[in-house]
Structure formats: C-alpha cells, structure tokens
Amino acid sequence: MADFLKRLQSFVNGVLGVRTERTVHRTFPDPVLGELRFVGSQARPGGPIHGRWEVTPPGFTHRVRVAFPSGAEPPAPEDLAELGRILGDLDGLFERFRSAAAAEYAGMVGEPLPADWRTALRLDDIELPDPEDAEAWWSVSYWCEAALHWLVVTFDGDTVVDVGMEG
Image (cartoon, rainbow, N blue to C red; front, side, top):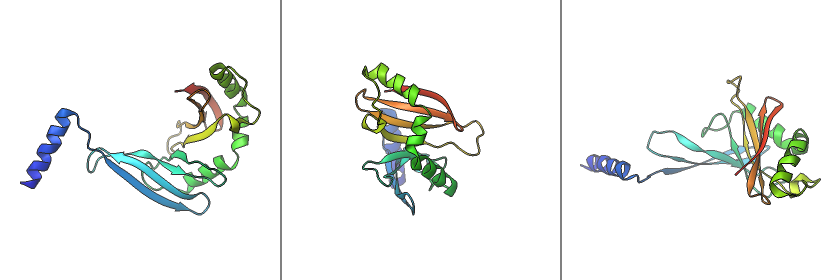
C-alpha cells in the first residue's frame, strides 16, 4: 500500500508540476586545492544528478564553481591537475583575452577596464572540457558587478574562441 501511495503522489506531483528534487551534497579532498564540495540536485531517485563542484582556491576569499567532465562523480586526477594549472596562472590566462575583455567591459559599463582586472571582475565559474571529446570547448566566467553580467570566455584547447558578456 505504501508503494502505491508513493507512486500516486509522484504521479499527482507530475501532473500538477510540483517539483520534488532531492538536494545532493558531496565532498572530495584534494591536497593542493583543498576540499571540493559538490552541490546539486536529483529530480527522481536513480535519475541524473545535476550541479557543480565548488572550491575555494588558496588565496581566494570566495568559492569558484567548477564543472568537471565527471559531473557529480569525484573529479579525475588529470582534471584536478588541469584546474590547478588554470588557477595557478590566472593573470597569464587573462592576458590572453584582455583586449577583447576590455572592449566588452567598456561597452557594458561605459568605462575602461581597470589595469588590475581583479578589481572589476571576480572569477566565478570554470567548465573543463571532456578529454574524450576532441571538439570539446572549455570556458571561464567572471562576475562583473558593475555590469551585473558575467564575462564568459570560451576556449578551444589553448585558443580563445569567444569573449562576451552574458546576463
């Protein structure tokens, strides 16, 4: 009887559009990056889990969201190494698209991008590519408080493919 009532409730919730997502939290320790936390949700038991990992890199005062190719599963060592490489040289990374970022910033904010980009932009999200997909792109997003938009930079390997504000 209890199983029937659960199925009936699930059916009624589906018909009425009631969402019954389950929150999913996981942690994963890394000796270099510290503790990674997964925050996500699952719409139904046994269904896919959607979400992002979060990490507070050394020297940061805020968390950065990260999408690993493994999704909700613990990240692979090579993905952690790639994340460490990206976080290890954020200024070098930014220099690769500074001129395009400066143009986007000026267009949205109406002022030039400050010489120290960190005063205007905050690293918010990194989406790593799937190493098994030869055409997979990866991206880095920065929150721009002055524009109330994200500056999103997309890469194909080491090549910058697109820089734009999204909001």
